[in-house]
Length: 136
Image (tube, rainbow, N blue to C red; front, top):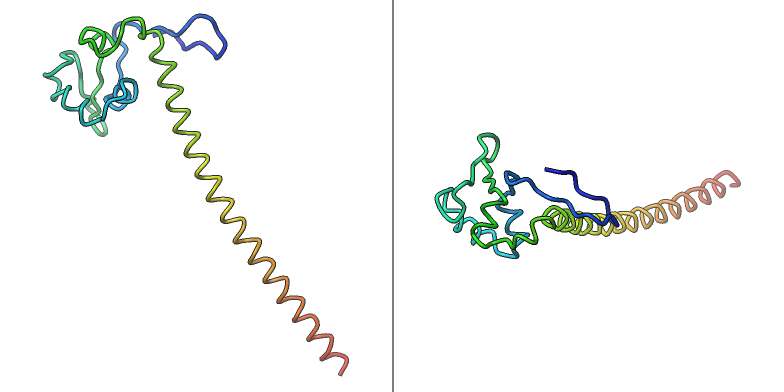
């Protein structure tokens, strides 16, 4: 597989015939539900005959891009764009996750500021009481 081009480059990334995609990546790429993709895969005996299952971890299925083109699930003219599209979708998911994290952090900051203000008020009250007690 050749390396993906940087944004703004004129030549798109291309795949070698043995490049593989996970079922989730295929679902993202085709816009289909993951359950549909799993049904199509049918434990490696279905739509994509060259699909293989990793022997490690969660035993993820991997489907060669050539099988996707052969089955008509991927237009051959899009093969050069697959990597760029997946990268954009991953970035979109990462952006959403970061946006949610920023919202949570802003909420935590608001709560921390309110607590700090409350404590500053308590400290001011205690100082005034100490001054009154020392003057008496």
